[in-house]
Image (cartoon, rainbow, N blue to C red; front, side):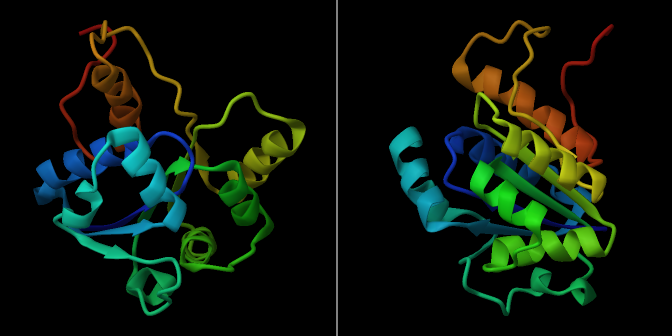
Length: 185
């Protein structure tokens, strides 16, 4: 069974994190433990973009960025997947530089050093050269950069449908089975 941590930064795109957690809860039979880590800015962006405080009622354990007693702060806890969604460029830069100044960057460092799966769903646009080099560094270290670039093959009808095209791709990258649009079907 899988152990996964979803980390939410203050980048725009709270809808991606909200949908990912909802979809992971629906496939509960595919994981043993799901933890959520939210930055202070992530809470503000969630409230601004989604107009609610539903993050206060998530059906999983939510950790603060200063809680280094969280199990995924150590490789011995054997979390196998970390998804940073949305991933701000500042967070990506700290991950790329190996700066473990909070629980989020420490957990990412642990995932990379243990050669486990780190997926960073970067949301900012356009990219400058520093962003591109940080994405390269994280990729070379074994991470996966998944820009929050929606697809339109499935003819999404609503903003939530559009966001789901990104979230479904992340679920695929994380190795979970999901019922989603597949090209050619």
